[in-house]
Length: 394
Figure 1: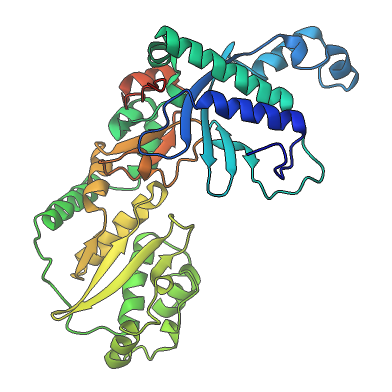
Figure 2: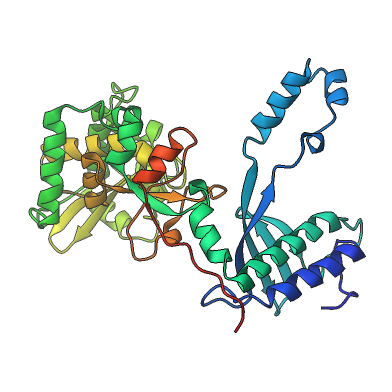
């Protein structure tokens, strides 16, 4: 990649980016990758003068005194020392180079990007070069990995904590999850989960099902959760609370098992009709009718933390009514209620959703960043993953 390449950065930035990636070639890449490097960079908070001019802030009425100026500075930058996860990517096939800090892309360079309005970020890239130089010096001295292992703040680490340990410091979260249940209901749920894990009653089926039956099953769940407009017909309740993309389900005759079976087994029976409690991509509740050679049964899916209570109440209501229903993530939700579910802790800067890849070999579906409140106490209760060691190229 020469200086002629089309990018949106100025020439000095090009030069420093070349220098940055030349230095990275001295460091081993991420295992099983082609052109990816990971490091931990450090930076001091710096002097208060770099935060902004006290005089200008006072004139703009942002602060009224020097004491307020100092207080605002420390509120904005509370730590004297900062750590940054650094990931650099280089793809030779399309001449792409990228830099990520704290899991966010800060530099993106393609050979085909227009030169119009070039960005001058050479001072920032110079800081990256110097910071990588410092890492290389510590790697040569044999101190880098030990320093990271001993001093990396917990909010940048990956691990897990048991729900009960998290609840010991945030009891309101337990109340939010379980406060709407009686001890008898929780015991009944635990027994149902254990029975499902043993395979008990998994062969139970309904001989037939209609769309009206399905709406009635939905209404049982709505009633159990005290949803609004329970005086409406089951079909109207479904229309009010479900996703809305029913793909023709609500147009079927409610008392015709043949039309329901034909529709269910057609290509029109997609996912959206079964989103009976609408929400986001991972925060809705699904109720899937399933048909096999023995008949019909239901599969209930609602494992997001915020929908756990609703899902449990639907499961209890259907089970109590004798409806054959299977709960997805039964063990995980059982562990959640018991307080022994593993809650994944992902680094600051990572949005705590869809983070399964951070926990290879483990079944963890609930994630969070380490909160600021009780951080020190929580970090002692977490099981942390080893921090990958970095080495120089042999």
